[in-house]
Image 1 (cartoon, rainbow, N blue to C red):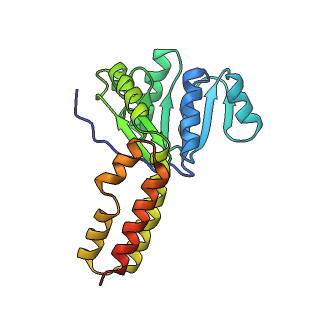
Image 2: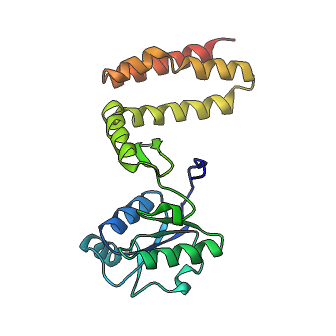
Length: 215
């Protein structure tokens, strides 16, 4: 099995096709919507939550079996039916058009895998076994979810704001590097590990102001 190259795709306003209307397809649709994608679903039937998304206008839907024409204008495809022959046809036709396509539960027939992901706001930790053991990836994800709580997402937002300010207002590359290093020391991570978010934020902000005041 070939080695995989990990990437993070920007899907905002990109049209993504999900073929299938069951619970697995539902999870894929929700994850795509969370990334700002425009989602089209093709399936004879839908789960009630998917039907609700259609009624609210959050996704588009064509009732029926998959047709080649469904690929028109699509950036990314997920084949998530319970019929292997349909999933493989979707994958073959999508790849013939140089599209990104994932086949749920049979990723070797597509051209990308979806890793297990721990999400804490803008912090994302992806775990992949190159498709060899999704169960192991899921177990590692569960361990990481215990280790990294929502406070990490809040800290990432603060760090992002400070980094933007540093890059905008400090021209000296060495001072930039030193300040970016100083605002996130080991003590900050130790405070977070103990759940002391406010103390961690205070330490980051104090380090930032000290660094900005230095010549």
